[in-house]
Image (cartoon, rainbow, N blue to C red):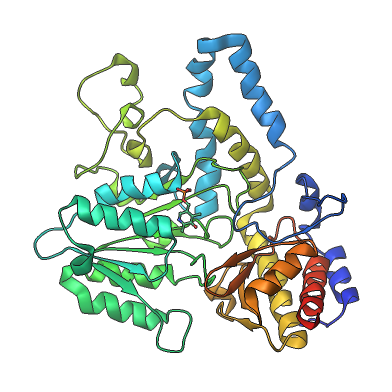
Length: 416
Ligand SMILES: *Cc1c(COP(=O)(O)O)cnc(C)c1O
């Protein structure tokens, strides 16, 4: 891609952007003076699709008018409206996905099934510096089995002087641990560095070692083009309030490879995972649905799923291939402008597009101070200790001119 170091280049790219009209489908945040901010925090909380209200109101109206009568035929299968579009989003077969619960809860539910330590095989690989909630969940799972994380948790860290992991080092670690390895669970994209992992190669290596392989896709869904089925991943979980723009606390999703649908191993069960034909017969014995839905526990939170349905229709209309195409160009432009104009700013996110999503993690002089200055100038991004400013231009609602303006504001902040 060839860029020019000018606002007119940014403007031309905005005019030619085939996804440019999607911005109007969202309420774009403004600051106190009613000016648009530059919203680069879609990796933390996506902005509100304008269609959300209509979707929520519809369910409120059904509840208002019908009470319990809204359940049968309407809410009972509400989550099924999120199956086909979710499958397209993550590259799965429809039977392999379901929307349920929140992310960390789902990590627990999935690890109950896919982390089954025994005498010889008890180790679990994660990446060092993974999101704290994942660390708490995984360590508590280890302790739940009466084991000590000191003996079982393998945290992969970058080489001395490097900030991200090399794929070959991940694969070597998997090979080394080999018959002691129970499970690999990595972030599809690391929240701090923005590094995207080679999920296919890691899955292949994990399977060769005889382990289960899964991914936390909090920063992967709606950001990368995923192909979970073809990559042969065993399990995955994600949230929907980040890139997917489904609103604070909106329900997450899971992927369970078809291979595991006749699961008879450990699983924490509830009535919503029970055979739908006999669910309301209140049978005392659990007869699991033989799809990802078998991992459901409780009935679906319809009011939380309605905004997700609104958001998924937008993602489905655009399609992940087109979203990703724009994303690479938008983030590529940001990277280019930083290299051209801000020699003092380092980018720790990998330079290869296939090793990252839309986020760039920046290390700037006087990091925290600089972050506060750009925040005062109307940039919404975030600071993560020890030294990173995370910026994530979202391909469905951000513009090339915003990327340009952001770099200018950062330049001003550094020279003040
Ligand atoms: C955002 C995020 C979470 C948040 O977990 P919730 O259960 O949705 O609150 C967990 N893990 C990762 C990697 C995240 O990025």
